[in-house]
Amino acid sequence: MLIAPSLLSCDFSVFRDEIIRVDQAGADIMHLDVMDGHFVPNLTFGAPVIKKLRSATEKPFDVHLMISEPHRYAGDFADAGADIISFHTESDSDIDETLKLIEARGVKPALAIKPGTSPAVVLPYLDRLYMVLVMTVEPGFGGQSFMPDMMDKVTYLRKEIARRGLDTLIEVDGGIAKDTIATAANAGVDICVAGTAVFGAPDAKEAIDELRALCE
Ligand code: DX5
Ligand code: ZN
Image (cartoon, rainbow, N blue to C red; front, side, top):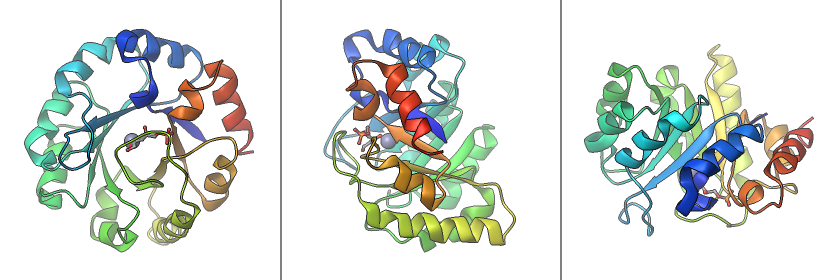
């Protein structure tokens, strides 16, 4: 299991140091939540901030766009150094056009689905996706409870990915903690995002080690 700490729960006054801290603690991927106060009722940061943070680590930047018009901004996030760009199927942008834009920049494209969205929505694009992000909470805030019902979507996607012989990854995001990560692992998840479980723990390395061990 790859562990992707969500920087949404870090101490933003020392954002760069927090990336370095979880890098040294063994994080596999840095999950960066971009919110526009429109697609979700919360605001975070944009491409200029990510660009400044890029040199803090060599680990991949997984940029999760919770914005209404990803097509307008995806290029900026690519230029800022994103390795993976996830955008929501529920956004206002055309999915095919937005994927094309991300692909043209050589960035790994991913589609994200909210809890109320059927995983069937991503099927027409599955062959082009590096990853599917299955939300296990309503996007917008850290610290919410994991929705175990979402594992049916993971099972469904896992099956379809295998049937087509693809190597598309499945990521889950929201409420991942010591008591929920095994459920995700058993369903066939590849990457777990964890905000509160990593940044709310006294020792990030212990927290990450423990989360990973619970998947074995
Ligand atoms: C929520 C974000 C998540 C969030 C996860 O909209 O996409 O990445 O930070 O936080 P936890 O792990 O605390 O649920
Ligand atoms: Zn996220």
